[in-house]
Image: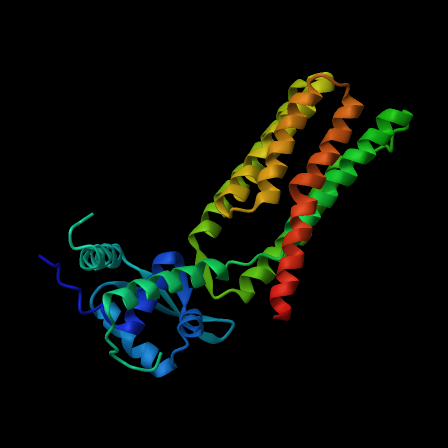
Length: 97
Length: 198
């Protein structure tokens, strides 16, 4: 029986964002934009979806008079990511070998 | 990535995860400047101490106080590197705690030596033992062989200094500064410059 893939994560940009955030302690919006080669508008929408799902925390602050958006994966996001990877593995290796 | 909800196959998903984790890992770049400054100071202070013992000519001040001068460029490089970065890696967090532990241990050992008197010829062995710990761990975490080797050299020289006099121990300490920090720092600096020019 195949595990169902989490629809929140099974989208190119959202999966890219959560993979980046899993790899770092925290990252600014500019880092995510630069690494995913996405537009600011699209990235902003996808970040909000991850935030609404409780997968990431988003903090807005000012640094040297410039607005700064800092994203960090939540424990719930880590669990969801691990489940997603396990589900992917079950698709790739259905016999569990 | 322009599609708002682009769906992928399972294989594409795994490839994307690998690609992004790789990109994040490669983003952690250090200039190596702090390592170079620290290495130069250890080499200079050790050689000056060796010169004083060898020539029996005292400078009239403790040359190891120069270490405190290293704090100024260290803080400057640390702040300027932090300003340029738009993320904090897990490794960086670990490094802060590791090198802070090292600084505290060096301070406590220096304080111990000044309070109870150093064990004559062989107190340098304990310092070199400490030098090896953060160097070896840092090299291991970043899979940076020059630092792994530098850490091992510190430990080998620490043991060797137990069989030599104080002056030779100081030459060994200079070698530690050279192999554990100065040379790895130069390699990191060259890597950084190469990446900047790409």
